[in-house]
Amino acid sequence: MGLVLTNRLNREYINSLPIIRFEGEVVIVTDGQQADEAAGRLMTETYVGFDTESRPSFTRGTSYPVSLVQLATRDTAYLFQLKKTGFSDGFVEFLENDRIKKIGVGVKNDIEKLQELRKFTAGGFIDLSKLAAEKGIIQVGLRGLAARYIERRVTKTAQKTNWAQPELTWKQQIYAACDAWICLRIYPRLLADTIDYRQFNEDEAEVKKDEWERRIHLTIDNSYDKK
Image (cartoon, one colour):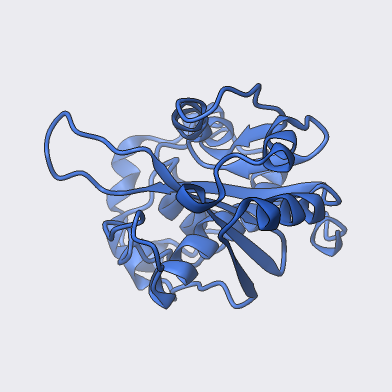
């Protein structure tokens, strides 16, 4: 694993990377009892990947509530269809638990939208975007962070599909699962990265692809991946 020594990755480099896909088990959670059971299993974890999806809006000033909550372990992704599950007591208990670290990108907005549906006190959430910005990294979205720390490309082809529909397509399921799961892959590498990217100029963004081979070795605590 190496790191590119620049605070911005150019589009050419990102698009040259192989696509990463979630290949574990996908569990669709469709009622309150299933939500409590899934939350109970997740309560045994230390780290859980987190993301949400909402029906896309193509009209200025119009937005829709969260339709899907994705929670992922190393090998299983749970997709909670909120219109069917509601906010079960077990699910809320999980969201409020400080011990379990829920790792995502831009989690503040996700939490606020969930709190519009039911009030709860968020606990244990970790925002990869915030951690990356503190290091001087400019592209703090999931696609940029995956390219930087996993050297893989996250596809966004299902992003603008209808997440409120009763039955999710297989393409939606894999997309949603990957967005939560990959946060677990990024997190330990981001923590282990001690570089202050503010030392690099933004104009380094246009360096040629063959210059992206300037790498440094990054030591990662492999014990994390075994949890």
